[in-house]
Image 1 (cartoon, rainbow, N blue to C red):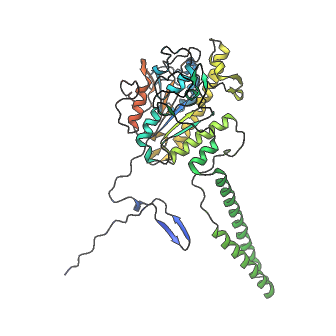
Image 2 (image 1 turned 90 degrees about the vertical axis):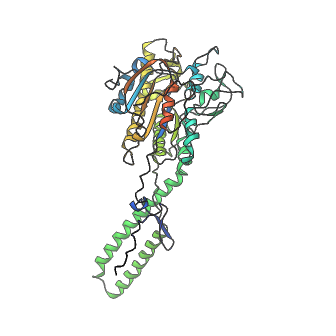
Image 3 (image 1 turned 90 degrees about the horizontal axis):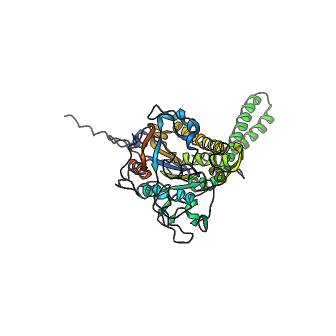
Length: 448
């Protein structure tokens, strides 16, 4: 009689399974056995980043040459030319909420407050601030529970949340683009070291661990040399010297055992170069912030991030670009060529840094594709021309594919006064938020 063989069961391991030996425990790497039999691989998770640049642009140097995918990214956008197949530059987008609507001056504050809310802020310098919920926080409320941080709010300049910063408008409007509620701005973190600590732990402890690991490696190298030399020497020694050498080697073995007891695993997240340096200049600080954004996306600490390159109305000097004047002062250019050239130089440098960030994402593998393919990265300003203080035909570009939700379209010239909220609604849908409307949207823009 033929015996029935028991069915072969597929081995399924939990990712938290540990290899144990005495007091030691090592986390297993990802194994095929951890994927349940016949189960589909987990879908890639889309991420989104919103970058804000203050004071508008030199629009003549910003606009691409031509339309569609054949458009040439020139002038301030030239650093993105190598990524043109993965970038879309929009013309014609408007944030009506940034306009005065009878409130008079204060366009810089309105540009910051309305950038991601597409809402008109109440003109007040008191506690009764009111604008709207920003698109990043709508997305974070819907999907943020899946990551350690529902959203991250970052910036390059600190700023107070009380007082008046622009023509009767509260500083809260100028210093924040992320709003959890109509009267609840989400404060940003402006120090790279603090961002790293929040995401991955004390950076000094990480640095100390790296130094300790390096020293242990050096110690091991020395021990290897000692052992090799001792073996070569032993055959030429007399009995007494060999005994002394054995005693010495015993102490070496004890040292090796002590090293093994304190052995630690290298940190999964490397410490960015220069993070612990004091008095970081603006270029280094921005580079660190972009690196931290990339790390946060890659490790899925958060899938929703905002970054302010400066507060609305920032008057930062760009001396390192040989532009000593304040940015805000330059934006009131009065069509003077030298001021317009200086603004274009600032814009070009900002896009250059942004392009380097995108290249980093493009080189970072994330499942079967790169991290840029799984992300939607937006870069723009709440003002068009800083001298006109206009809130129409705003500079805005989108990079990345968002797990197939978008595709580089080159230059897309939209109808005049197309709501910026239409673009944000499309991003919401790509991030699996099913709302039919956002702010003053009329329809979701096509991203492919």
